[in-house]
Amino acid sequence: MFCRVLCADICGIEAKTVFVEADVSGGLPGFYMVGLPSSEVKEAKERVLRAIYNSGIDLPPRKITINLSPANMRKSGSGFDLPIAMAILGAYGYVEGKDLDQVMIAGELSLDGKINPIHGVLPIALTAAREGMKKLLIPEGNLAEGAVVGTLGVFGAPDLRTLLTMLQSGEISYEKEIDLEPLLERSLQDLAVDFSEVKGQEVAKRATLVAVAGFHHLLYVGPPGSGKSMMARRIPTILNKLTSEECMELSRIYSVAGLLGTQPLLTRRPFRAPHHTITVPALVGGYQIPRPGEISLAHKGVLFLDEAAEFKKETIETLRIPLETKQIVLNRLSMQAVFPADFMLVMAMNPCRCGYYPDRHFCHCSEADVQRYFGKIKGPILDRIDVCVGTKKLNVKELRPDIRTESSAEMREKIIRAQKRQEERFRDEPILFNSQMGQKEIEQYCKLDPDSEQILDLAYEKYNMSARGYMKVLKVARTIADLSDEEQITKDHVMEALSYRNAFVEGEL
Image (cartoon, rainbow, N blue to C red):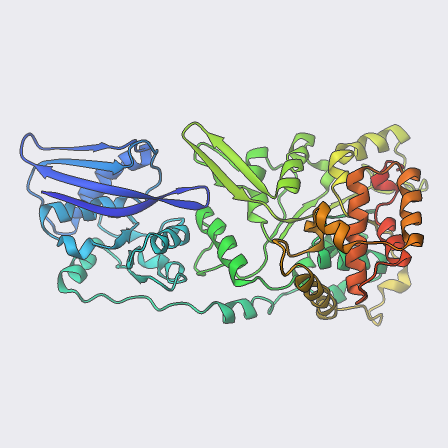
């Protein structure tokens, strides 16, 4: 007897279709698996046979051959358990072939027959819909995640015995389709922090407003306790909500990483803040079977590097290519995985190891020590930062509780208004924010009057700016003009943008 079922294997954030073929024949009893399975797939033999037996199904001893097709693609993960079990049961005649037609299957089995949740169900569901499948059979713990794709009938069962009864009786209960809009609306609520809690630092708050409005990369430099981390960790409160397309793309990444938890989708822009001891593979992604790293987990959101100068230099340097290409390509012997990496980089650091330079009343670092400390992130990385702002020690009057400061809601209102202007401007372009403009868009939307052009030209020569730095000033000036509801970039906008490419960036620390 022969039976074929459809499943999928995860590669990057995509799922590739795999056929599981089971052949049951006479001869010496045994279990054979071919088709380039990885070690965890090979182990499915023990899990599947014991799960079937412990579910009360007594299989007569036969020669069982499992083929995973296409045979030239390496298969990995525990999600092959359930499709292998269903193919075997179909070959033995416990399940009708028509019941498995147009069904994509994924799931892990316990030895007692329980069907356990797996990672990567959302990409599998999207692949099933793309391949024209009508149904998706997955673990009960993944039903909400699979139901996000509304074109599929999604169903599951707690264990193999119950699933077999459902298929034999035809009494299948399908999960309801999930409406994204209410989830996205609620994502901006119930945030525990607010920018109104940040006292003083009005210049830094303004720089943060500009950076978020145009999705520009941001660097805070200042003494300990001046509010750098406090402001950075409140950036999620002023980010706009995800679009439905962004939500699906981001959720695929988190599904593969196994970080969705009990929620069907990730509905809030991510804020990732790895510790400075993070390794390069953990930041970029990788390992033998490519998995997303912190950079890809920050896609469409914020990657915050606190105490940036404490990160290893080689770790910081790995950010250079993703900041330009907006993706990470990982090559392995048998596959190539592409992870998206369109994120807003936010860094915070002290100006020296003790943190108090240039206040010589407290700082005792030598000039060489200061240069060496700051030199860890100088050069190409700093040249890719759009907005750099210093923070200062607050005076006691600024700390009084009766001092009112701008709230996150007020800042977010300004940002949404500026981003609507960008959305209208780029409605025919494949970009969303000013920071994503290329040379063609800069020439079209960042035209300067003679006075503004003269100021920028003088700054270019005085500070020995790079061509990249010149273009970044234009992009930031465009965002500042959008915040002012002005179509024309003026010299005031250029001057403010230049103030954010200060001595820290231009090498005059």
